[in-house]
Image 1 (cartoon, rainbow, N blue to C red):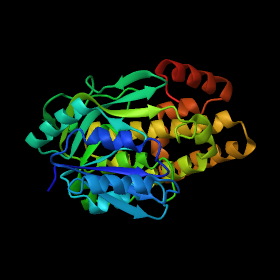
Image 2: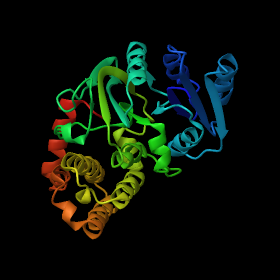
Image 3: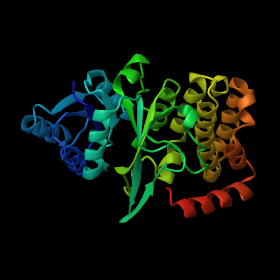
Image 4: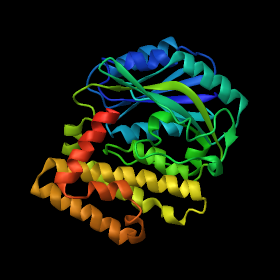
Length: 324
């Protein structure tokens, strides 16, 4: 068994996938890299096969019909043999020094989840997201020791390394042909996480800059139906109000709060009659599925204020925290 499986879902990634793969190959022992070609129409598969030939003991390639990012993660998880599982998007990369520290640490511990820092790489500028004021450092802990997450901070796919067995045991399956499933990937397994370790290193490098990225505001509005679909799925998985651990319960509510706030504000920004109706339908769905939860979504309710108030506040926060 390898220590960690890195899965890189790729779709038409020929121009940038080298950086993702090469950054992981800075450590060649005790890892496997699973490159999933998700029906690319460029040279992605050829590049992946070249890597596989050069590093047959490290790299394996899955060539499949297009099914979206989630299907790439599903395919990688199915064949992963590493003790731990990490998704790296094909336009992102990892820090080589931090990778060595991650590997050295994972050899010494046994946990369900390791949390690391991620760095926004945007227009030549960097912003590191840390969790030192929330999570204990350099020790194994449980949800009882987790502090409060602020409104602007939460765990992303970039910051989590799950135990592979945990993901397989809960039969994690992400929906096909759906954007923003990384939120499901992070959110759903947390209910089953018992032990956590936080390593305060700038491990994951999250590239922001391509016009066609799914996190681009214009693209998110165009794909708002996908965001709404993910919101509803997260509501349907389980009721966070029934989680017995207080800190875990608070965090799961916090995560849903951020998700509903993002969907709500984007629907408002679009200023279309159709999206106004979709916003009402989304909140009606929340009231129907979990009416008690509505009052606990503080940020989301602020986003649902009249547009003349909500949108300027959003723009101010966007400027301060420099997110897309």
